[in-house]
Image (tube, rainbow, N blue to C red; front, side, top):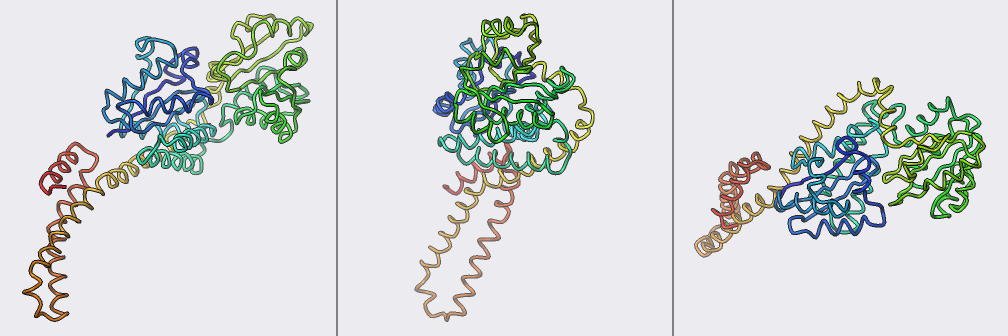
Length: 419
């Protein structure tokens, strides 16, 4: 069985297609069970963020699992598979491990080194574990990936300065306006991304921060933690006529702020400009609102372009992180290979011990006149012979584990010894 990852991300597809396959929290459990119930899949984890939609599976058969996952994505997007299949990337075994470790380390993010992705990897794995669709192989893989992500950030400067989508969104807003001092900002959303934006805002001298969310208690809790003021979602339209900046990052599956909502707000703003930074995927704000006079609407595409500026220092750290990832991939493969062959080696030794013990039992009558010391010598002698006979096969199986040769040796061992 192979570990396979199939996905789309910010580099392989336009934003509108990525939006169509993104899974919100309400549907994620259903999609997880849909994937894991397919004929060729035995384990699954789904990593769905503003930058990527990736499905990690343990595949019974590679091509069958690829078709299964592709079909799930097609159903999510309401598109025929051929409409996006060319955009999919597919990695298996070592390359799949390398990809996940790179993702967890921040090397594959729109903002290189961002720290939010590590939490998202952990949450994706924890949900799959809680739902019983991630087991031995993916549990081992994701646990190691989180360790790699932590090590990359602890041992290098990859996360220095702007190291999250949320902080980059605030920095981009400040750049557009020449600073956020004395500005009034409305943050729509109360999740991890919204909290990150709020914390970044607090360092920039804003006059007031408003927080709105579909769940009132979450809005109040976040506003209280950060020092902002919660407003009802029904009051957002009125607030849009007053604020200078709207930052939005909800997990909604469809548009929250329509063109008509902003059109009414613009009419009440008396010519004052409004900057909107929408980093939600799918987008929270109707893209057509960008055509309204006085409205500047920025989204994830704009954020990626902004993040490219000033990246020189952190790019120097990429080589160091890449070295960590490469070393950890090899360490993982060594451990995984040993785990994979361990049951077979154990079964081989158990079979040999059963034969040895049975033979001693068969000759028990002839050995009855021996004293305890002599019996201990025979016990040690027979165990030593078995250990020496099994030494080379054991070493060979462990050394070749995880390779085509290893599979052949394992199959031959099972056949020869009836394991």
